[in-house]
Length: 464
Length: 98
Image 1 (cartoon, each protein chain N blue to C red):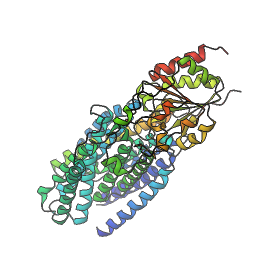
Image 2 (image 1 turned 135 degrees about the vertical axis):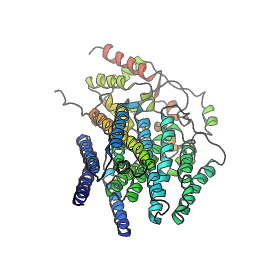
Image 3 (image 1 turned 135 degrees about the horizontal axis):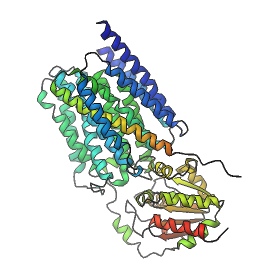
Image 4 (image 1 turned 180 degrees about the horizontal axis):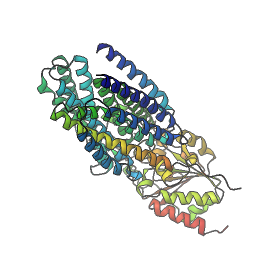
């Protein structure tokens, strides 16, 4: 009796310490200088909490050991994926987290049924509904990001009604279970229907909206874990879930703002259906193009250059060539910085990681607002693989589908150079008037090889 | 039981506020590692799964608990690993050569 009491106390203390460490961990993430300390704090907190839990009275360790080892074996390769694959890895880990929560919730229900207290049934219902829809939704998102599923949004008439109907039925069933927990046979519905909803929810969402969707799923995963904390009366879990939920929520709001769209618009309004006609009329307008040699001469003569990278740069694996360009120009005394749009990449902050991987110092990476304050004094804005986020129509053309979206004002720089494969429209299928401006030079070609030739011209050519 | 519920709601609410205040201060530079870190921390759900599987109340609950441990552990291990890998890449530009 005494030993059980003592072990319960020890567990509670480890949870308390873990809570403090988790909050410090997130606090230290505020700056790159302290961020790694944040990871260590998180690891220590996790270790303490897991070790404390293993002290729990009357445990059967053989299953636990096997499960912990197997989880580690799966986790290690997931921690070693390429940086370009981080978004799909993140989506996959949301799915795993949601799977864990759903399974535990299901087991708890059948252990307690048929006499589940109403409040517990309500949070359990929330836990399982959020967990199930996050599980399939995240798997779908990971599939789209990995391109094993089509990235184009798939829409049909009445889609929103069908989707919301499925979710509404699940919620109604959960309410019935709160009132009549003895109707155990209804339980599978609050798992299966949200599983279906998770799939349906992601079908109409295109690749460009993935940053918002991943953040939103992040938030759901956190909230479902917090609900699990209510069910198990575990404060540490409630806190970790609330922190994760808050983080996902803040990131989703950031992402929606960066695309000038509301949550409901991302979730219920597929993008890019009626722009085909607008783009077709523009094909014949003239553009000015330049060779790598000319581009190198202009860049070499500049004082201040801002590079605007988009996901296209990552797709063609050009970041290391961009780093060489950065080095070559910096060596000549040119001030080179990077202007980064919040949705450049496939998840929040993705572009910063890709550039940091290429050894570009993070103090040269500017957020959108800082970059926009700089463009008027910039000699050359070099756009690599970005399109819609530089489209001045977002500022001026009220009929444009992206009107109002915050953009990088590259058109305020003295010269704009755009590296692009051809004149095809961007991800959202919207024409970009920037390309027809007098001060814009189009550099047609693959980003990686084009930047490579510019670097050769700068470092090899005019010897100095 | 009823009182515990209210306490839990207080805890949830306060943690939510702390979350907002702390995470709002995270530089957008680090939003990707932030997400992988919160993901790893969120996998603290593993403690619930450990108790479920360890108590071995029914075969059904033990099997579900065991799968849940595998899923959460892979998030803990993978999440911390990749967060640290990403953060190691962030460097300042070296001291300027005179």
